[in-house]
Length: 252
Image (cartoon, rainbow, N blue to C red):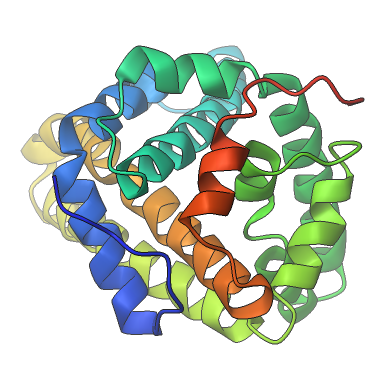
């Protein structure tokens, strides 16, 4: 297992580190993604091949809800896996899922509040929505790794951490989204020109998303570490104490 150090990182170093951790923990990270996003992925394929949302609105809605909750659990479990890797330990799939489930109520509350605030900001125009999203880009990491009085406190904590670094958050989500979305765009273009490939592209696209999904969580977890190192001299001793706290007993 490679040895990692908590230190301030440039934009490129965060991307390199995220890909390195993704490769090292590939089996566990993809297993988490499949466990948390597999069912909604199957539902999305069924809806896509069955005529679309117009013909299956209820299934699409169920898939959307399951995907949203699954995203929170998967990201929480991924944050735990990355922390274990940094601490030089072999992360276990079952322990990662269990740890994330211990935070599920707080993750859902914080995630829902973040989504509502980003949506409301977006109504004002695109730029305010982007700024708010960037300010809340490490909310999940805060919920998983920090012990705050309530879930909603994670919003203010994320905003404070990203102060002065929201541009870096935007660059991260833009580049990683482009890297992850490029194969899907190519597949969509092929399906548009060769309709016979539509089913293959639809199924392959969902499989590919499950495979590469953890990269985004890896990138923003390293971004969170970077912010804390820069602002609070965060180190492995702090991380070890925080990851050892286990399930929160504080108020939602």
